[in-house]
Image 1 (tube, rainbow, N blue to C red):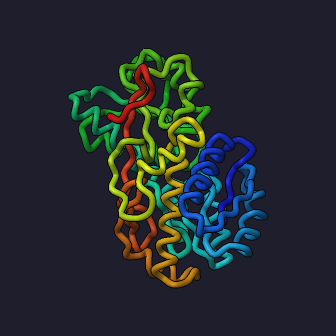
Image 2: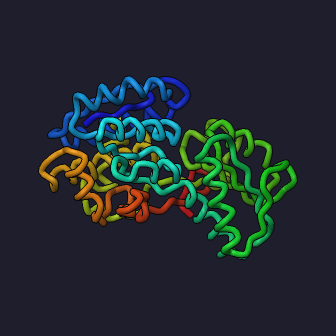
Length: 317
């Protein structure tokens, strides 16, 4: 199994989590040889690293980030290989190459659903300000937040100043989200994609009360029909690092579990063999439910998780 991982560059914080997650999983399944190469968080580096991995590996995992996964899908198509997308939530990435990309995470357009639903269920239908950063992922997450708000009867304002005390949903790079949250301390309810990872606590003065949205959170009680259980993996990860994993590590492990399971069922590693098996697969891993639209390759089974920061760290809402 080959995996391009951002061990350096602007995505190294997330790449370190992915690497650790895969290495912990590989120790639990030593029959799999794992080959990791640094993609430096750059598409042009991926142009070299991914074909080299494809030439040496039976199974391929994608990189972390929608931007890198967009390039990885193009490369996989040119090589006629199947790539398991664990790190690109962008809707366009998930559907661009349906015969060559299998996506594990919830699409970006559905990121905000648990936050908006929480506001509605608690009776808060005040105006929601939606702000997004650069790139397709951020734009798609914001568009999805707007659709969800309208469905729940919540008025929406896009962009503008965040210091005016309105509820806020923001989606962007980690740095963009952190800057917006710092400026929005008077807002009654703030949800940021960046707040879904534990590193958020060290980036802001006081994270308490901030909502985060992420692909996974420990203690969700997901039944794992395939592979290692959540409890076993979290314990092994903590033994190695001293802290629980964040969702980038777990979604990479889920992709590895699904890839090896489909290879076992198919009895081979070709794109056609793997795609035929995964098209009708409905199952679950420690990451949660898995199913794809067989026509588009878009993930349909998995759901994002809403958290809120308290005194001892984030807790599931």
